[in-house]
Amino acid sequence: MKWQKRQRGGEQVIGRMPVVNIQDSERYYLRLLLLRKLRAVSFEDLKTVDGIVCNTFQQACKMQGLLEGDQHWYDTLNEAIQTRAPFQLRLLFAMICGFGEVNDIPELWFRYKDALSEDFVRQYSEDSGPQYTLAEIEEFLKLIYIYIYNAYVDAKSGRIC
Image (cartoon, rainbow, N blue to C red; front, side, top):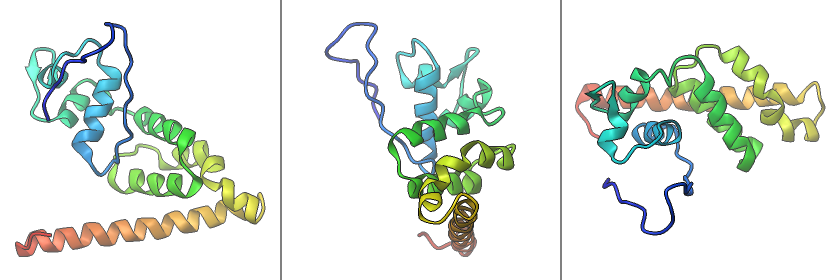
């Protein structure tokens, strides 16, 4: 990646920021820094915390305290709710739980249960919709576990996927 200065517009311009999959971790953390760190003028500037240049964007996020608590997961899901279907939200929720470092998964569930279950509630009922949602999230988590397990086995055997 190369930092490119904006060609048009003034100093106070907010550009379009694409959605980034959590599995693309460095871009995910880059995006998090771009949304939180003001007046950055380069990638190195984004990675610099208290005069120390971090090796990765994730490390910079940690050093800035952006990954403490679950607020960044709330922000991620709040943003996704604006443009994603419930099926996509459930997959994102499972990826956050499977790959992310969530402090309080039950709280995350209770905050977003309605958005995650919206289609199932409409299809079934207010009572059974969340149960179908949890069952689907469980299936996604099983697939994530298989993915992680296979990556571990491949790494241990020296095979490159």
